[in-house]
Image (cartoon, rainbow, N blue to C red; front, side):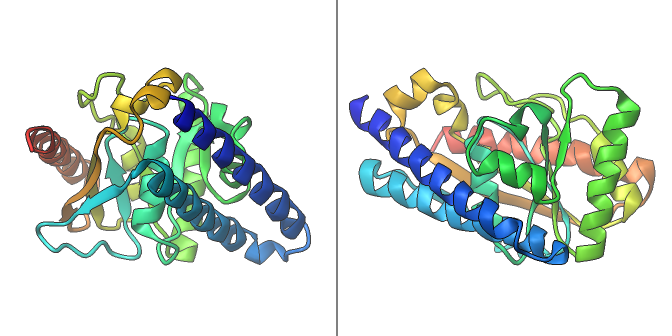
Length: 251
C-alpha cells in the first residue's frame, strides 16, 4: 500500500508539472493549434503515467486485437466504463493520429491535474450528470462538429457512468445518435476489463499492480445510417462487449 501511495504522489506531482508547462505554452500558442497542443500533452502525460506504473508495480495495459482489426482514423469509438483510468487507456490505444475527444462528466473539469485542463481546453465535451437534455445534446453536437472538421475520433462511454462491480450496464443511445446525426461515420467497439477492481482510492492502494487491465478491439461497424441502424449497432456492440468481458474474466 505504501508503494502505491508513493506512486500516486509521483504521478500527481508529474501531472502538476506538465499542466504548468502546458498552461504557459497554451496562452502563447495560436488558437488554431491549441487543440493539437492539448492532445500532444494528453498523449505525453499518459505515456509517463503508464511508464511509472510499469516500473514501480509491473502494471501493463494489455491490448488485444485477435481479429486484426484496424480502427479508422476518423470514427466513433464506444466502450464500456469501469474506472477513470479507462480514459487514459483509450487515449494511449487510439494514439495522437486519431486525437480522441471524450464525452465526459462536467465534474472532471476541475480537480485532476493536467486532465481537467485538457478536458476543458482540448475540444472535449463536458456534460452535467443530471443536466437538461437539450443542453447536453448541444454540447455533444458541438464536439461532433469539431471532430468532423478535424477528422478526429469522438469517444463516448454509453453506459453514462462507470460500473462499480464490473457488470456491463445499459447502453444509452441519445449521445451516440447525436454524434452520428452530425456526421455518419464508422463505429469501433472496445471492451475494457479490470478497471472496476481499482476504481476507488482504497482499492487502488490495495490492489493496483496485482490485477490485469485489458482492452480489446471487439468490432468495427460500417457507417450506420438512421435511427434503426444506429440502435442495431449499439445493441450488437453491447452483446459483443459483454461477451468479451466475460471471456476475459475467465482467462
